[in-house]
Image (tube, rainbow, N blue to C red; front, side):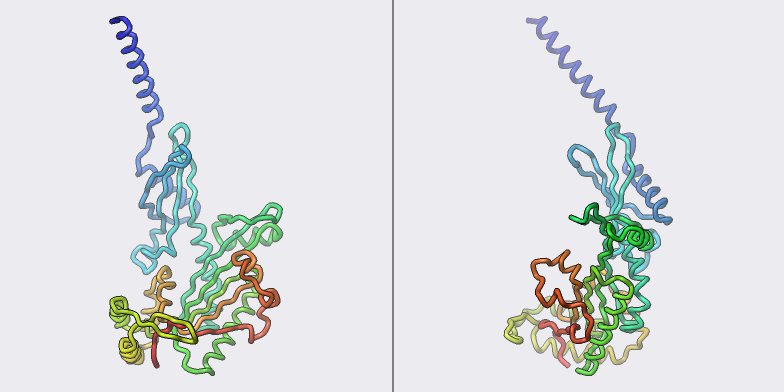
Length: 347
């Protein structure tokens, strides 16, 4: 009996020794700082500038340990771009079978392409719509093998993407989602018609630049009163108020109380009238890109949406109409500028 116990004890000890030895051999030879350094060096080599690598976490992907980090350039620290998700990317790095860190990968190329496209379009945007405009861009580089399906490709710049498209247009294409936020007030029908013409001219420009084939364009006119100093206080008051049902063209919508809307419209207008163009532009530029979609609620005075047939087929195939199939936006009448039901300001 004692002999069997000794043999069993020996087996357990040997098993533990093998397990511990295996753990020691597979234990990582790095720290979180090593992960940070590896990713930082990779990003510097790829993009030519230093990056902040933070919020590093680990996850298990089919038995492979993968580290994920948030990344953004050091150059945006202390600017309005800091803490704006529009300018942030991610990076990943796997732990290899021998415990080594393999080559990282990243998504920041999407950010660089968007910035490149924004810088390319901005002069024409300002020429057409004026200085008080912010852009949100989403550029996709799609590639295919046989044309049956298209996948995203991480070209790191607009220049690199354009070279690939020019070299092999049958297997590469550009998809552009572009939203323009114009901070102004459209006062009357005449001004509305002028804005429709502006949008039409801009669409023709995008055609000339070969940016129309796969295009989703939104031109959103935000009431300039959001730029007034007291707007944040009124916004807080709206958030704390009980919304009121209102029937508009047969639709029931929820809006802030009428008294609050009147008071807000009047007081903010007085503030806007006293502000210089420089002050208005400064307040507009203090708005983070990631917050633009949220600011449209109640503040969007007019909106025009333009979709190429190629983009409709790609993103909204079930909604395509016969009219969509014929619409190339070759005439001004195709540009529809609508007022949303939830616009809250009262003249």
